[in-house]
Amino acid sequence: MKNLSILFLFFLFPILLKSEVTLKAQASEIKDVNCITLLQIASEKSKKEGEMVKYEKLKTLKQKYLSKYSENHFSDDNLQLRINEHNLKIKEKGKRYINKGLQKCGLK
Image (cartoon, rainbow, N blue to C red; front, side):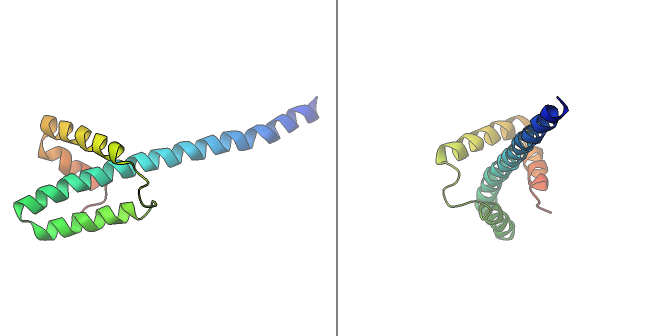
């Protein structure tokens, strides 16, 4: 009986470990998508306002996030959905939402 329980734990542990790693990877990917889309919105806004230095910083940071993934890793529909979500929150909370989001994404 003791051997059976040890064998059970031996096979159960890798399964639990794999699911935890997958969840952490998905959470990181979601954060990266949110940063990529927020950086895209902020860089377009900076370009319109003529703040080219800030635009270049935002563009560089966006490329840093995109370089983690293969080309076309994120679908255009997914990116557009995130952009729409951000635009809705920007309308609700204003410029403060953009600034807090950019700080979370690593902009200083």
